[in-house]
Image (cartoon, rainbow, N blue to C red):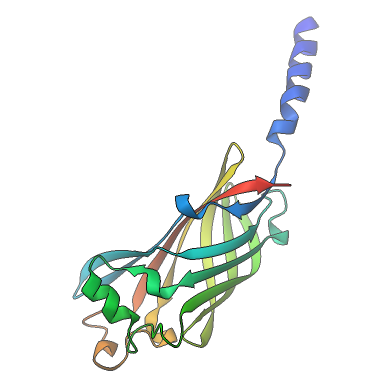
Length: 186
């Protein structure tokens, strides 16, 4: 009987630590927003160096989650300064007229386990499309880790116009991968 009481007391003492928290403070310096596309059939990776996100996620209440992501398109890192300059130009992102991409979540649903799905609107170059992205969530102390990926079609946003519109050179499908860390707030 004493061991049962001890186990019960330990369980009560640990229970507050296991409670869900709301994760709402993006740690941008520890987060990544990357992409992979195929150029002439060869996978090429890159990333965006500057982005900001407003997140409000409680794993106990995923339907109440909110998220917005702003991406500084000129912060693209294709692996070469020549490539960075090219995709910032008018035929690709046209960052002079459209400096940011924006995603606004419309809803999050639980898929089971630590898997979720966020759906919302992605806006790039003045065009807005529906996007759905599966992601996993794990909690590491007071930090929430969000890992996910989805495919974006560049033709939907007029990314790569003119001579670059040929999908044989640069594929239409671009995989966007995100690894976001967010602190728990009050």
